[in-house]
Structures are given as structure tokens and as C-alpha cells.
Length: 265
Image (cartoon, rainbow, N blue to C red; front, side, top):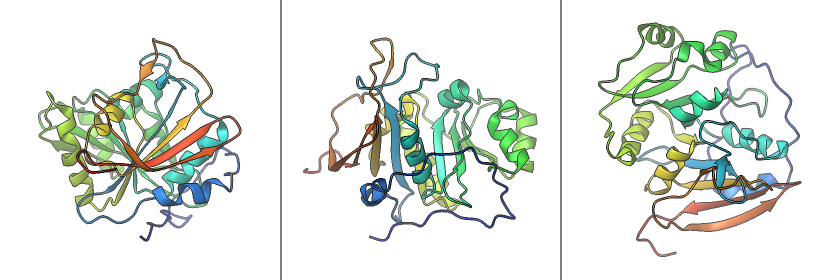
């Protein structure tokens, strides 16, 4: 299958201020190749990825930003982002981490941030994402909210001027797992063919129970975070197929394809 190419725009359209990344280990390129996006006709290709401790925690406590992985696997994350049209996180991640959600691998990569914020809790105007867009070093996000959520007029105006948007959907707030196909279909309708989803824990656990994930890439750092840590664990058993492992300076990376429930493995 033909993999989608990295997203690139001319340098005069996107001014990129870079923080340095470690060189990408050359052995990661063939390792990741089977898990890169391919064109789907029904919905965007979905890569689910996160970094976790040895005891399957992604943070020491809810809402606390926690260092788990080595800088070389951070470069891997940006390499993966370069092959995707969009990067998606839940509202808990933007509230806790205020992330950049950009791509710093290669010369001219760009990626659309997507935030799932059903109750419109996030103040975009005060975020790092808003600042990066104003500086010309990123794109404005698509923010998915419930169709009856009350959004800030200031944020609406800013997003409109930056070519971002609030995207209203009739979300099922009692069973949020049902919303993922709605979100992915909406993204597909505006030309997003691949989405890299990076968390947080609620998002990861919901998607591991879904039928919309294609590739899974997990970085495992050499640390235990303990029983108070924020755990990644779906509600019921799931199986990965076509599994491979890569070992770096301190981290290990496991990649595979999520096998749909009911299919043989």
C-alpha cells in the first residue's frame, strides 16, 4: 500500500521557529514504515500514540505534566506528525499541558491541531497554540464542541480570523465513545485524510475500545509512576497484530495494528 507523503508547504507561507530535536535514529524509519498512514475512502487513517511508564501510566497524577520518554523518541513523534494532516488531543491535555501541537521534523511541515472539548472549557485566546498562530509558526485548531455548548465570542472571532473553527456536533455526552466516528467523518469532509491522536488517557482508553484506530505506536520509558498515576487501560481486552519492537537509548517503542473486535488474529 502506498503511504501518504509528509505534509509540506512553501517556506514563505509558514515561518518556522524551531527548537532543536535530536537526529532521528535511522533504524526508526524502516521500523515505522508499516504503520504510516495510507489513504482510506471511508474516514481518515488514525494513528493512536502515547508515551507510558512501565506500569502503563501516562502521568504521575491527573493534570500533571510528566516526563517519561527520551529526546530521541520525541524526535520520532515529530517524524510521525509529518506524515499526518492533523493531530488530535482531548481537552484535558490542553488544560494540563498547554501543548504546541506542531511538527518540527523536516523543513516545511505543517499539521492541523484538533481539540475535542465538548463543554467548551478551553480558553483558546490565552493558549500557546493561539500565540504560535499569531507568530506564523502554526495553524489554528479545529475545536469540536457539543452543539449546545456555550462558546466565547472572543474565541469565535479569533478562530475565524485565523482560519480555525469551532465545530459543533450532536455529541453523546453519556457515552462519549460514540462520538469518534462523528468527529472523524467531520474531519474527512474537510479533506483531513490522516489523524495522529496523542491523548490524554480518557481519549486513549475510549479509542482503544473503538473500531476506528488503524495503527498504535507506544513509547515505553524506563520508569514506574506508581498507583496514583494516570493509567491507560481499555474497559475490555483488545489485541494488536503485526507487532514490532524498537529499542532506543533508554526507551522501547512497540507498534502494531489494532485488530477489530471479532476478527481473527
